[in-house]
Image 1: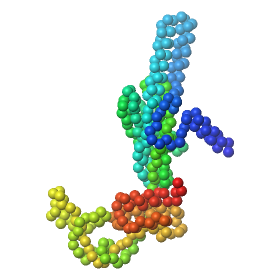
Image 2: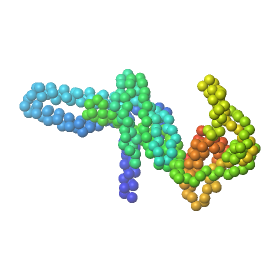
Image 3: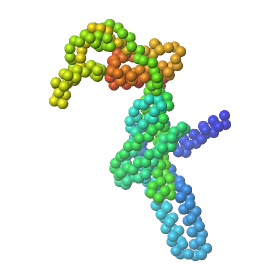
Image 4: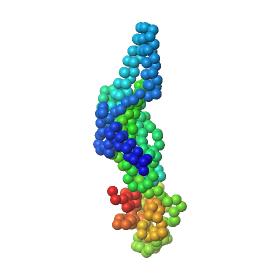
Length: 331
């Protein structure tokens, strides 16, 4: 109980002190009030040395000692200005965040925009938070230019993964001081369920049809037709393709069969055993969707109120995976 109250108090103080915000859409401007600066260990050591030099110069009335002390102090003040300027007045924007499977690393694209006439060097960015690896990425931004940085965060469970809090910091040019700021990007990555390993075979059911584009009816050859997306590579008519000459502008053609039976593939959540955990069912359906696409088999899909007719292709696959990722999500 006490530790919980301490964590709440610490988060409240940090949010007020460091002006932490919720997700910030669009471009974000780092004004002077959002940039903080403190001495590093090297800076503290330099400060102690300056105190010793000043006391020695006073005690022994050393003119050169005073000159050296104030010269070093002046360099430290200039370094403070350059360190602060290296981060302040920077523009930030969130980019793309491609979908991933649970257990993988989600990649968030972040844009740094410099609209000032001076270059910026050694700006380090990293995600901060519990369970996040400390892997900062460095960026140099030229004057009136921009650059992009990819930061990764572990995708532990399916659904929407919001980008964690970003910390920007720099010690340029001398490393005597550290300037930093915080930014909460308005970016989300969609996390698909983790595909099941060693899943059972695809749920194929043979039914008689007229087109007979299934596993049966291979002996009833009906002719050649133009290649369509989803056709099996085994059905390509290689002899006719060689005669047409793909390099000279010909097209792919496939063998067409009539009669027989086709194998209908239906990926249905309700058809899975009731004893299975919901997440395990979604994991198995994810594996079947990926396998059906890899084998070029048209498949139907049913998940609760969502039902898709048998089809194949990237759009169909993405729609199925999207439904699996957000199943039961109330957001």
